[in-house]
Structure formats: structure tokens, C-alpha cells
Image (cartoon, rainbow, N blue to C red; front, side, top):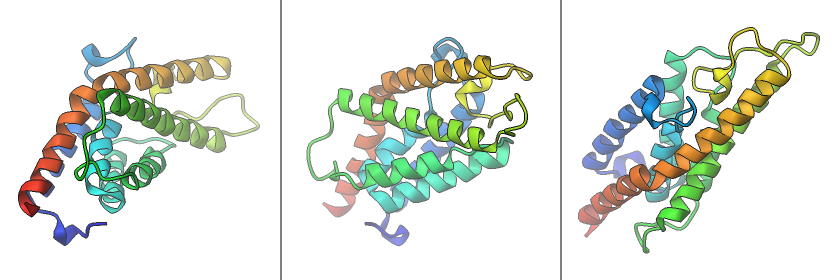
Length: 198
């Protein structure tokens, strides 16, 4: 585990800059990178290499900062913070890739897809728990929830189907982009650590 004081300035600046880009992409959601109107989970794509290279503590700090930053600009009943924190803890506990060979692109793609699924499932569970059991309407979701493709006023089966479609589409796009986004970030942060300690 690393303390914040032990991180090099270049790693912190790089993490902050790329984290802001991931946050901006999450909010702007470029349509040309989506599948049927559903984009990738940019926070998962950022968090995967960060937690793998820096460990659980740094992963949790990064997940909390990005999760809270997203919460300040989106208004919703559910938060991605729980899913991101679980991913940061889980990925950060794995063997540190900066000390061994890098994972294959397929491994990163699978981890990113499963991570995106976990974040969306935790969001859907929160919405289910927050829904009024006396009403047939489901509370509107958070700004980044993939099921928000459902129009306001839909309820029941329509929202469930839209949520499942959005979750699967986001996981596929996130997994597809992981080797292109997460692998360079993982190599960058590991290289910065090696050059500092080497």
C-alpha cells in the first residue's frame, strides 16, 4: 500500500489530468463511441489501470474523488460510488503489474466489462431499493446510469428492458475500449513508478 505522500508528483499530476478527462467524457458521452446510444463507462476505464498499478488505497482514493466529483454535477437517486469502491478494492488487491509482466489486452477487456457490469448492477439495485413499493413508477436514475435511455414516465417492464440493454451495451463498449484506453494508462503509471524507484 502507498501513502499519498509517497506518490511522485508526476504520477499525481498524470492521474489528476486523466481523471478529469474521464470525468469530462462521462458527462459529455460522445455518441460515436457508443453502442446503440449507450457509451462506455469511462470511470471504470480510468480506475482499472490506476488500481492495478497503485494498489487498493490509491484505487479507493481515486474512486472516491471521481465518484464524488460526478455526484456534484449530476443529480440522481443512485450513486456509482459503491460499485467503483468495490472495484478499486478488488483490483488493487491483485498482484501489482508494475512488478511482473503486463496483463494481456483480453484480460483487461474482461476486467473492464465485468467492472462496468458491477457498477451498473449496483446502480440498479439502489434504484430498486429506493423505488416506492406502492407505486408502479420507478424513481429516475442518476445521470450516468445506462438505463436513463428510458424516457421519463416509462415504468415496469420498459425500464427493466432498457436498463438491461444499457448495462450489456455499456459493458461491451467498455471491454472493447479497455485495451485502447486502460493499457496505455497502466503502462504510463507503471513506467513513472519504475523511473522514480529505479
